[in-house]
Image 1 (cartoon, rainbow, N blue to C red):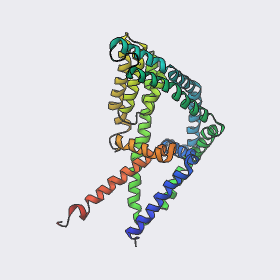
Image 2: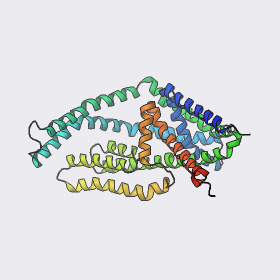
Image 3: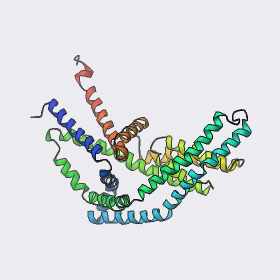
Image 4: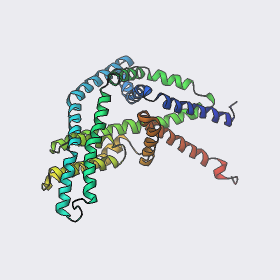
Length: 351
């Protein structure tokens, strides 16, 4: 006999409260385990496919690990130093860019930016703030990332956690399935399958889209001769999971930099704009339909709200779990709506 609804709600509520309290209390302590779990989840389909090709689970994980190590070494040697250098240069160059913007406004609209005017004062303040605060923030993050503990976390703990979780992923999921309440096992498996489908479509699919777009923007902008093209491409690709926002921010930043660098060379400026237009066409018509699909059900506004809420409550760890939690809540909400529409509360007693 199933437990009363009141008792079930109490137990599930307590479980959710314990999870949230754990996130809040442990904070960055569980960061490597969250990252390791996310990496294992993303790589599990690859390991399963290698197993279907005839490799054992251990051999499959070993192949994935070897490829990941080689990729990380190449990334660290070829991309990261240039990215850090361009970011620092962009921060240092910001005041000069705003000075050039001030000059352009002075030439074009002399009445709007007279000596001592509000616009001129604000432009100077923005440039100085970016140089001072932006430099302090970046140097602080860089110094923190280069700390011994964080290096150990990034280079040792996270890969080790991901390796062992990936190795035992199928066993863990089987154990969790055995622990499900037998009265609700069918419903819970159905919900878990929908949640997995949503997460797979969004995290794996959209992650691939972000990687492809970021690489395309960075390479294309650098080939077009745009200064800081790698930084702009990295930013645009990183936030491409929010529809239109990544392209909008990246496009505004790239075209703004192009206006300062190529002023008067309208062909070069048009090429920079064309790069983002082509990227958006490629994303909307090829990448997203093929890799993500239309069944994800995560609205951009819902994503922004989840990122803001969990980021403010739980910090960086909260931002990492915001998307999975948003996906879970979305699936549960749709399930609840379906149950409501099938209930007497919705249909009434006329049936």
